[in-house]
Length: 219
Image (cartoon, rainbow, N blue to C red):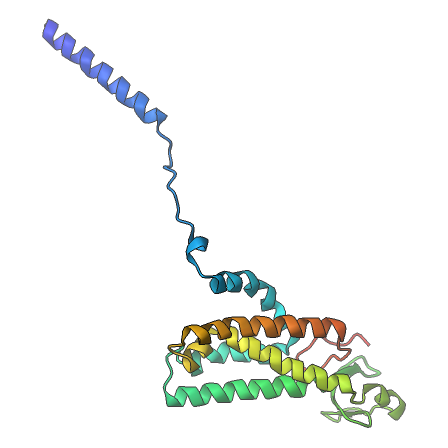
């Protein structure tokens, strides 16, 4: 009888000691996570730091063109695994989107007497209304005529779209499936440099047009 009582007492003391030790352990064991930044190259860190700051470049382009490119890019590139046909379709898509960004910089909009938004193409004499639904007085159309800054914005739009295309991994993998270290560095640095350069020019020389794919004019 004494032996059984002693064994029960020892078991009870063992369980209390075990529970006490378990209460001292934290609920979550804090593990040391390796510092990935220390293992990544300088180029990779630069890209991760500047990607979000240059992502807003798409806002400087026509919305419809950018959305079309982002929608069709994974399809025509076969998600980066390209053959000769996919490369041709990807080149065509990039070229068409670039031309679209260029041409839409010469479009503008205005509101007629009824408040309807009308789009037109800027010319050297004024503006040609695309749908022909209304006519614009010559003195008012002179305010919309082509200027040198319009060509500057058109060239910058092409450069910005090129930067956006270079940020698309499907497009890069299609044309450069196995890039060298030098090519990889160029593909990383070039769109960032284009983005910074064009952003400064857009700030210094802002556009006054509200063309197709851009915010509507309030006037």
